[in-house]
Amino acid sequence: MVNQDDPRPGSEALHGTDRDRRSQLVDAAVDHVAAHGIADLSLRRLGAAIGVSHRMLIHYFGSKEQLLVEIVRTSERRQRDLLSRLHLEPGLAPADVARLLWQRLTDPRLAGQERLFFEICGQALRGRPEAAPVLEGLVTDWLEPLVAAETAAGANPATARSRARLGLATVRGLLLDLLATGDRAGVDAAMEEFLRLYYGSDRT
Image (tube, rainbow, N blue to C red; front, side, top):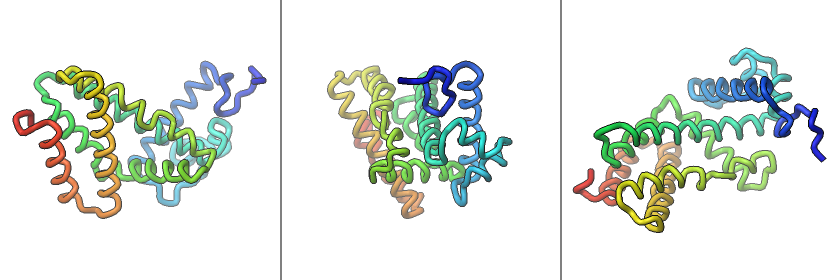
């Protein structure tokens, strides 16, 4: 039974000010990781950087691993929000939207976020229970906006879903390639070739 007065992380008892404060801390942590990466990241250093004690971070998130999961999930949500905004920009073809999102994802200043994404996913796949929540919605949260874009471009729902999943997998694979090899020119060229095949030369 859940204690409704329990303010621990993950408890549905987090209401109002507590929930707002938790969101503020996650946003600040995401911004810090984006600017400084994850090298030697500890709760003490992160807390000092964003203006709280490490005990406060433990209070709201339970552990460093749980906070890192929330950083990853918030980063992913920001990327989906950006995708949705780009789709609303007048005059942008789907391939142009994809290029702009790709430029954002591969911005060297955000490399720490992408590295953290793969690190936490790896921990989850190895069975680390505190990292496991990162797998929730890892694909499905992206499918809705991607499928909507495909259907708006004329694809039938079944095809749109398959294409969305293919596009998501390709982008993540190339991001991992970039982190592993550092070959920005090669990865960008591969993305351009994918967009040519994905959208067709007449749509790029």
